[in-house]
Image 1: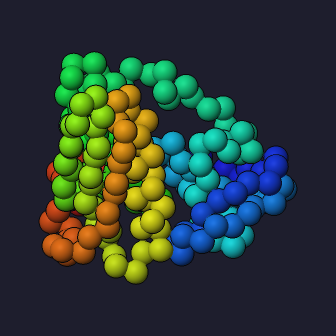
Image 2: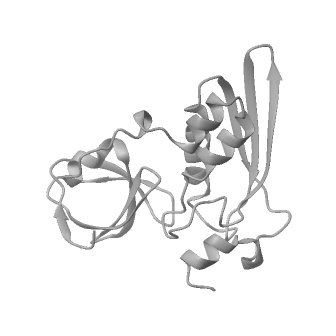
Length: 182
C-alpha cells in the first residue's frame, strides 16, 4: 500500500464520495489507500475511487481465495447460527474512507431473519455517518452482496434509515481503538 501503481487495464470503479460509476483507463496511476472487505480504495488524479476485488488484477494484486477461507461466518453457519453468520458478513463491509467495518462504526441498527421452509430472508436497517454521503447505495449493495454469499439465504434487503441519527457514541470500543479515539 501507499506506493504508486499503474493500472494494467481499464477498470470500472465508484467515485468517492459521490458514488458515481466511472471508468479508470489502462495506464492510470493510482495509490491504494485502503484494502478492506474485498474492495480497494485508490487515490487517482481525479480523487478517490473504489475498485471491487474482481478487478484486483488490474492493480497487480493477486486475489486471495476469500470464499475458501474458514471464516467466522462460515463457522457460524456450520453451527446453525444464521444470525451470527449474517453479522459476521456485515463486519466485512467498510466505508471506503474509514478503516472500520459498518458494524463497529455503529451503522447497522437492526438485522431480522425470516425463515420460511428452507428459505431464509434477511432484512437489515442501517444508516450512514452523514446524510449526504453518495456512497450509501454502494455500501448497502455491498452489505446485501455479502449476506447473499451465505448458503441458505434466499433474499436480503438492506435499507438505509436516518432515525436515530448516527453519532460517534455509536462506534464500538474496537472501532474507537482503530480510529485512535481511545
